[in-house]
Length: 405
Image (cartoon, rainbow, N blue to C red):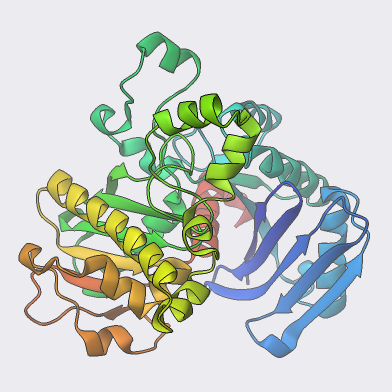
């Protein structure tokens, strides 16, 4: 057995998953959170069974202490890392800017570059750097690989990633569309080709990654040609707490008329926007329940949510010139028949028809939900960003450390 540990670090927490790369199965997963608070929390799951879960509450002063808690959980509850043949650690990094085009082995210089990119990803990259440094200290004898959310979107043409502002200013301050959820969009678009048994290079696909964070990607022959998130993960669809697309002048208006500060405006759009603002709840399951019960506010919020998705589907249909597949993924996309039906309702003229019975069927497996007459195949395919990070990590160390395999 050879195993890779995948780490997804934030400023006060990190998630992890240990994956057996021979079988691509999850051996263990967990979460260390509330780092730096008086009492932190850790959760460790062995395999995928709920009865394999253990939890602890204890002080966790920093990420280094958090990694010690994680290592202790492996030692006490398994699987033992000493017996798992750990060959690498893969790290999710949200923002790679225009510096990182592919998974990259972490060196001190790479660390510094990721930290420097915090200027355009202040909510994400600082936590990733803390996690990388703590992990490299804890696992000093194996290579570490950074896998960037933005890397998949480096194939965007200039027409798609350029904002119409002063060129010198944009260059100096790195203002352009980068796109995010790249590991998910890559994994799912490749899974579509495998599921349909068709060459990836021949498929034109629209991927709808719908979770608390949400984005759309137009994938042509396995390459991203446009995506809804922009310089930051705020642009695009309506999300759990993020507004998505908004007239930039609204910010100026609220600054002048409401006297709101930059921090307050940031909070308004990133943490108090989206479905939370429209329906009073950022959890789509609760919003759907309220709408089904007849709450007009919840239904109005869903209408806005669907309207935004349809706009992007139409946009990317035009950008691709034709569409073979539309695929739903992530927490909402995989589990909500209401969202899937609402997001594509009324698009029959574009050759998109969902079968109500197939759409309502519950399954965790890849499946078709379109009618036999639908010109566009509509799929539901579960994403697995951790596995994609592990795969890219393995491919990277196969080139840089072949003797380790």
